[in-house]
Length: 337
Image 1 (cartoon, rainbow, N blue to C red):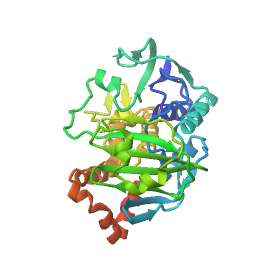
Image 2: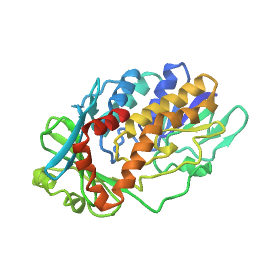
Image 3: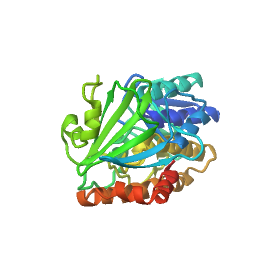
Image 4: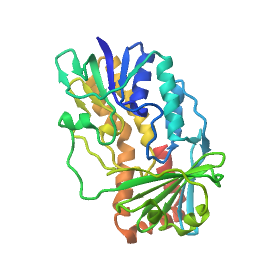
């Protein structure tokens, strides 16, 4: 019998399989798409995420990130990360590194989808495979979360994200968050001659229309070669629980607030490790509490910023407030890193 069946071969699923293999467990990942998998994300990894990758034996190339800068027009406020820097990394490069590390440790990765979950007191059967445990890491709109009846209630406020790459040299070592009445734009340096620009908004508009809400940023990108636009949403997804018997939810499948604070990859790696460690110690019941502790600061700060950003007049006060209270802004960034 397989020790661990992982549904989903994104960062969370591969990180769980790598962690399990490192602890001597047999892990099998089931993923319908071939590697590398691209996705609409900001592509900035917080320092804790970089440390988590190294703990898995992964070094990935990218652009060092010194901190976070909030920008509105000509005004800005910034906070520097404590200790080690973060990293701006192409999603495809991150996925390739995780995929290769998993194969190196003997993780079996098979094409397909996991569905039709059946459980007993000592095993779970799904997708034609039998395992002691199943980790659902099948993404933001997790089919397994829905199948298990763990989908939480929806929300009236829906936010969507889009990302595009631009062939231009990074002009900063910070992730820049540009604010407007309509949403946010995130500029992440990814390497020599390349930046990623992600836009988040409640409005479903073409990427160019979203970018037009940030005229100074749009002007600096005008005429540059671009890559395709990738989108995702609605971003907020709720889960009623993080565990259902012998199934544990990790990464985005366990519930997601918003991309506003940029912790997606770091939290995916952290929750994956926590789930596997709970299984390895024979205490799966500890995982939901551990998940809540790992994500608490992120959820609290993101919910707070979203509450302000919902009101255009209030959203325009965010950057001035960060500018006038740099110690408070720095404390918030340090709490998330």
